[in-house]
Amino acid sequence: MSRGGIRPYLQRFPLGALILLLGCSRPAVIVIGGGPAGLAAAIEAAGDHRPVRLYEARAEVGGSASFGDAVTAIPSPDALRRLDAANGTSNAARTRFVTRVRADVVDWLGGMGQVWRPLPNDAEPDVELMTPAGRGQSIVGFLAQAAADAGVDVHVLTRVTGLKRDGDGITVTLQPGGTVRATAVVIATGGFAGNLERVRQRLDLDASIPLLRGATDFADGNGIDLGLAVGGVERLPGQVLLYAHGVPDPDHAGAALMFVDGDRALGIDSVGTLFDEVRTPRGDSGMSLLARPGGTGWVIINRRAEKEIQLWSADQRSFVPASEIGARGGRRGDDAMDLARRLGVPADALVAAVQAEGVRPTASRPLRQGPLTALPLRLTTAKSLTGLQIDLDGHLLDASGAIIPRLYAAGEAAGFAHPWEAAHVDSTMVSGAILTGRAAGEAIVRDFPDGR
Ligand SMILES: Cc1cc2nc3c(=O)[nH]c(=O)nc-3n(C[C@H](O)[C@H](O)[C@H](O)COP(=O)(O)OP(=O)(O)OC[C@H]3O[C@@H](n4cnc5c(N)ncnc54)[C@H](O)[C@@H]3O)c2cc1C
Image (cartoon, rainbow, N blue to C red; front, side, top):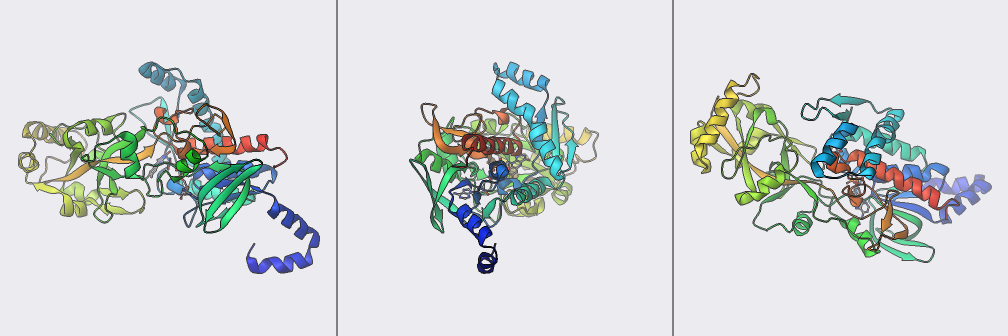
């Protein structure tokens, strides 16, 4: 309701006004962060008409999900068994998590109108991959609409900067806006992969290893600090997904442009060893790049690919032609031999790989047709897999494992390493954010049946 509109309403409907004023004076459930986790938590918490306020630091809700494809993985029981066999684990919590993805994310959003499309996954046929039509942006749209329908009071351009617990509630400090009281607070502020300093510190990463930011810059870990300040603990702080697919963004220092077409490219590290797959290295390939001298590499394309390939920026939502990067940061060679000489790497492996590309049946691998361009490839942060420790209902836990009353966390702020371990199955996280958000919202309804 706009400020100008409230006075006539109060005069015309005194009973409504009383209810409104009572509602306003009641402490609300406060959700910090308007990404998929925060929106899902707010929708559930508002389910039985309790006041729920969501504060979002940016000008619009959506969080990191607005910028990505929101590809979602649904592993089969076989895939989970395969994973456990490989890791020597058996994880009932993860199984429970994964088996809820279809009903509680795909079907739930489907009920709101979200159309899902299957994606091929030749590498792991027992993991079903789906992508939402309209990418992450459309998921965010459906969640924002559902939050509005549920009566969630959304405040954008408002940052939560402090939390203080006392006997019967939590005092939340806002910037701008002073303080407000809350019955319960959900920390859903995203991860910290956009904060290179924090990533380096948490991974104990040598300053000489070049690293680029592949996550949105607002994923800075500030909400994790809010949780730590009220007694929460950070679990497994060294878990961050690093990919080897970023090239430096010429327009934004420290940020990556992500390489998005592996079919037309070849990846080598700083000593000339080939990468299996440039586009989406699975498992530890980011770490293996890190383990090699210099922590850098090259992605090699030719002129035709330069015209076709675009590099995707994590937070500008823009696409940059590879030729622009090639012109600014790349090295060119007439052929593989010449390029290897210019890069200072042994030529044999590169020449052989380029020749092999030439005989592959797909016309889209024309690397034998030089000249070639090498784009500097760097370790790129993607997602932080860990954060504040929670239980399966989203309660924030302290160092002894006890529930910290009235505090909850969800999404990347709560990490996915434990207890859900979703990211260990596949590095897709929007579904994990929605599930943990819904779990926290449902728990609030159970924990505060009378809304206080
Ligand atoms: C480029 C890119 C591509 C991706 N692709 C995929 C993909 O294909 N599939 C997939 O599953 N995942 C993908 N991800 C990851 C996924 O988007 C995130 O894991 C997910 O959005 C996390 O959701 P969240 O709600 O926990 O946090 P976020 O989406 O990060 O939202 C957190 C929100 O909190 C706000 N906030 C932070 N601090 C405060 C504060 N103090 N006060 C108020 N508001 C605050 C932020 O502004 C932000 O809007 C991608 C991420 C990126 C960056």
